[in-house]
Length: 294
Ligand SMILES: Cc1cc2nc3c(=O)[nH]c(=O)nc-3n(C[C@H](O)[C@H](O)[C@H](O)COP(=O)(O)OP(=O)(O)OC[C@H]3O[C@@H](n4cnc5c(N)ncnc54)[C@H](O)[C@@H]3O)c2cc1C
Image (cartoon, rainbow, N blue to C red; front, side, top):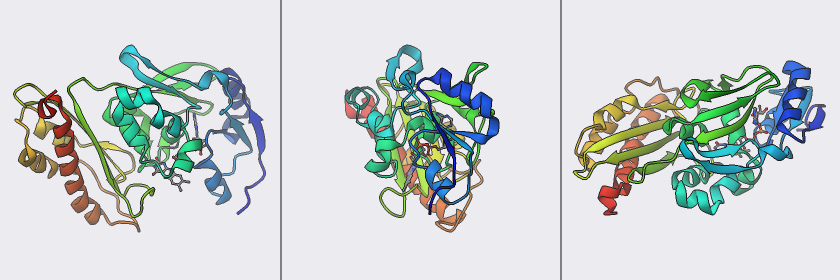
């Protein structure tokens, strides 16, 4: 299908982008990689009068490792660039692993991490990654700059805490401790499809193999990514082994209203999801320093 008519503005900077957004109000939309927005427009599910292209904005190109903020990626950084960056692979392999699950390489070549966060698809990897790591979203408008914690940012399917005229200028992706283990696992109908059930697990243990930290985010099962709080509680303080992980995984959806659709019922997602969480926990545990013998 052809796109509906729209005006186009190519912003050279963040400041220019937010000024144009402020001038045009709700009729303007940010254009990043276009991998979600353009299909939606072609399907007539969105009909903005103006697209503000931020891909050439000079001050939105970089990503950097910065102290307590961790890995900070600006809005024009493509998924593929972050995924394949050698320093990211070395210092934050969970990020590379999560991003390698986003669609196909062609999509990741154009799509952006911040675009995925702003788009807030419930089955997307990047929002779940931010939630699991207690990350944050850097927001900018013509009037102000602010930072929103990931747990407060995702409000519903394709719904975020962004106000009119605001854009995602960057994301802060905290680093893991040197001893933590991690895992991302998902079930999808085909390779490259959105996950029917996905889970990101981060587990840490002391030298006695007792769990000191557990952060589990599930996605593709509800209107937003969710922390599996009951699993985290069940693991903390336990001496970790596969049996403990399997037992804790039974609680994965205790506090979550699973949403079914034509791709998989809520019952299916729960049943499969518990197994995916169990395997993910075991994998994360195996990667902890105490288990890998580092
Ligand atoms: C076949 C296919 C398979 C896919 N599979 C997956 C998958 O498995 N997992 C996954 O996560 N994604 C998947 N995607 C989506 C893809 O990752 C998109 O790139 C991503 O969702 C949006 O990023 P984008 O940069 O392309 O944003 P765009 O398409 O340009 O924008 C998407 C929306 O976000 C808004 N937006 C974009 N950037 C900003 C910003 N900085 N600030 C404010 N608003 C902004 C736009 O206005 C628009 O409303 C898939 C896409 C396709 C076509």
